[in-house]
Length: 295
Image 1 (cartoon, rainbow, N blue to C red):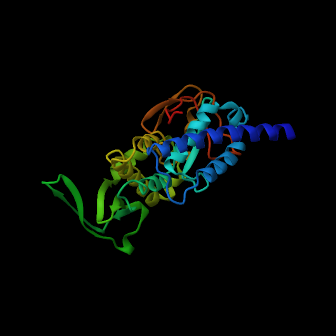
Image 2 (tube, rainbow, N blue to C red; image 1 turned 45 degrees about the horizontal axis):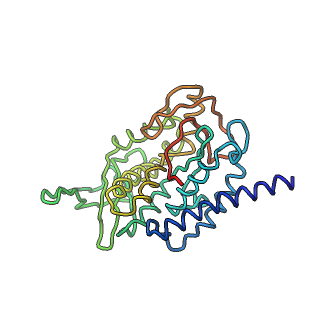
Image 3 (cartoon, rainbow, N blue to C red; image 1 turned 180 degrees about the vertical axis):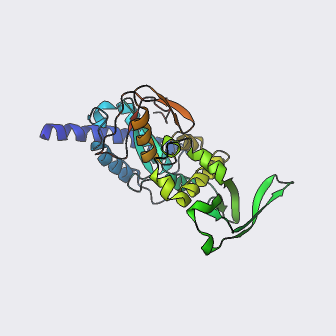
């Protein structure tokens, strides 16, 4: 037992020191700005504690079955974006022996707020009976909201007409995304949990899920049109958020294991003999690895 603990400690030291060295190198080159109040060391420690208790489909520790380089890259991806696994801003996902990072919508908001000129991200649902008007500026080619008058008595998850998200800067909105309910449901349909009718989140919390969807789209569009560092945007794009990462992936694995092709955030992935490991609800395993930031 002491020998195993000693080996685990050495492994943690090797991987985390390698990640921290890479982070420091990027910082010195001016390619990475560590968010104020964010401690890479603490985030790595938290992530490592989570990973120590995570097993793969064969009930083997992920830290033993996933390659060291993929583990280091997943952790680097996390630190570059300033994410915290304890705050559920990101999840670790195993793809056939390689560890990858998946960002939650809360993580997406956190990263977006760190982009230049961004103060906050807000989202609201539009219900039947609410007053909502938009205006298109032909000179700037910008669609803006000119009137939104929500009414408390209109709140009803079965009567959502749409949702909108606004990225706010110092002087007000700098990007707005508007989606009607048909668009939102099509986005939900990219995941098996919703399309199969097995997503309790979409069924019971439609308002929150609709806001998540429009926030994700707004933040992704804004991030990819910003002039922030390429390495941050690369990490942002390489850890795309899922509509409901844990529930949706679990449903897909249960329903479509053993070589069937699934739709995974508009990307085709293949699952081979996968199974859900209940002791580690934030991690599942599929076959195809994603590209991540490289050492």
